[in-house]
Amino acid sequence: MPDTSPRGENVPNVDSYDMGVGAGFYVNATSPPYNENYHMYTYVTEELPRLLETEFALGCDNLKSICGHSMGGHGALTVALKQNEGQWTSVSAFAPICNSTDSPWGKKAFESYLGSVEKGNEHDATLLLSQQKEQVYDEILIEQGLDDQFLFQLKPEALEKAAQKVGQKLTINNRDGYDHGYFFISAFIKNHVAFHGERLTKKKRHLAVEKISAIGSSFSETQGKVITCKAMVARGPKQPLTHET
Image (cartoon, rainbow, N blue to C red; front, top):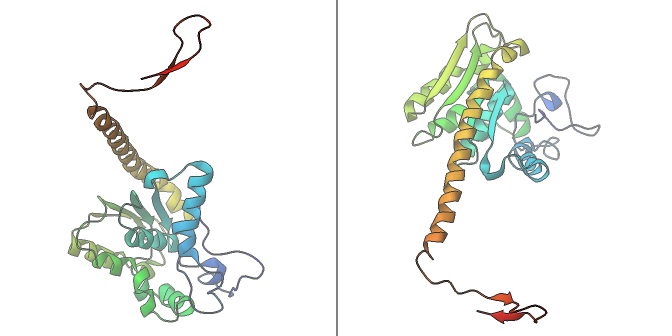
């Protein structure tokens, strides 16, 4: 699981849960003092995938999905919508910040990390989805608790309007009696694992078929033709090997 922010004794921080090491907002900060350490967008999109692929062979052939909660849900949606040319197989989120430039959390973060709210436009899931010309993913899945005390910050209705505008299938499961906490996540995380597993399996099978088809096409090039090859041949016991064609 990727962290929310960089860590370490010399990492700039503020005494607030929604900034600093509590919330990096998955951007590459450009404003001091955060610009030296807060490169969470690069970490999630480049460094971590490369590490997982190199060390554990995970995510090869872009067989990877992304999911997050709250600010992490914001990160999952924005990363998937910015990298929408096959880099990710599927995306889902729990109570994500859907319209961050119109959220007090997002405004505070973008002003501090990027210098202005406007510079956060490229990290706003609603704005990114609105810019699409067609459906990007077969489905985007979101869970939202209706007793969420931060619902005014999250604005799922804005993302829903953007999805309708571009024809993107968006499923928002509004859950009665659930708030913003981790019990909410634990209640429905199995559904999201299954959601991603189904799509990753489908893509893996599709890639396997493509590879088999590629092998078959190479065989067809020589089918029914005389094949010329070289071999080392011994014509009798204790006879030296000779090159023959």
